[in-house]
Length: 110
Image 1: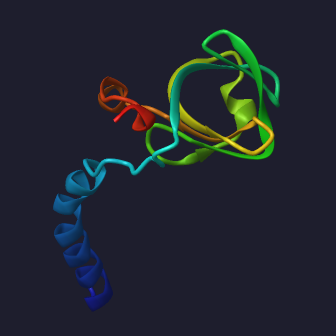
Image 2: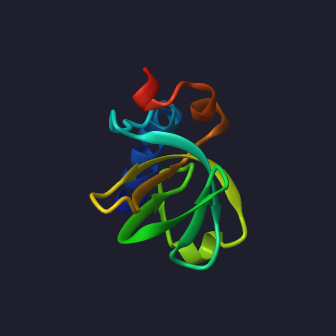
């Protein structure tokens, strides 16, 4: 094993135990975020709690692992989410919630 491989293995051995602690960190949602059951249709159409809505042109969607996802990959699926709206009333930020996050009250209800 050369020096470079040794250093990479050492760095991995130090960093790996810290990963679960990083994953357990709660995501910070803005205080104006609302909660709903969101169904994704064909972009930009969505439904929140059965009411038809639209995603804004610059909408960002974060998965339950806090990775950005494209709306087309979520078509025909339903999730419990926190979301915010832009000035026109379109949904501009969406966070798909983990089961643990869904059990907590919505940010605008705390």
